[in-house]
Length: 332
Image (cartoon, rainbow, N blue to C red; front, side, top):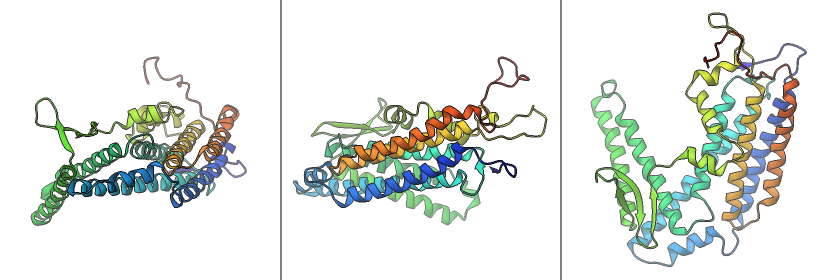
């Protein structure tokens, strides 16, 4: 659902600027990553990863080489997901003269989650061996989640043979991933009861990575200038009342009186731009380039949004949640 202002009443400047800078950021991110990846510098983490797997021979080394390729393939698709949502977020904000009520929050959340996953996987500060283990964790979690998703489908709605084929395909994928992982010399660590896989481990060098990727924790550590945005965005993703009610100026039982929250739009745009900067910074260092000039331009785009947010309280479209009079003091 989008909201279009009355004739003669323009969209808030914050929305129009967000449209522009998000589009600029998406194109700058794409151009920078193409430049970085086309010219890896000698001795950079990217080439060091290649050297690490090529320095050894035998089945385990071949398995680790395959795991590294899978890690890179996953990272590339995660980046594309972030870029796709970044470009889409920009387009939803005023490109057709309208603005959304809620979807900017969910689009921004996808960008942020993709960015921290990318940064975790392609961290230039970790060893090549740890990157391989992290890539193996992400690969196993993906296969396991696919299996759980298909297993949860109501079997009675499918042809029994088709449903069984889907399950067998998922089981075969998960088994193949597990075989690749163990064949590369990695082992699964279990919970204290010995029944549930909890982590992946490498003996030499000593590395242990949990099988659960804590995105909320990654958000707090890797995007500290967007505090709690992941949790705030989840209120829209999960349709929680506290995250939806502030666009409505009506009382319960009355027709909805919907007004977009311009400050929420600004927060979504700022967080998305910071997420893009995180990908850009990690990718630059991964390929041995200095990303600081690119990151400064990213931060300048964020500041353009921030300056307008500080002025947005004077806009008739800036709906500031203050708690309507009809709500009791304990009602949220």
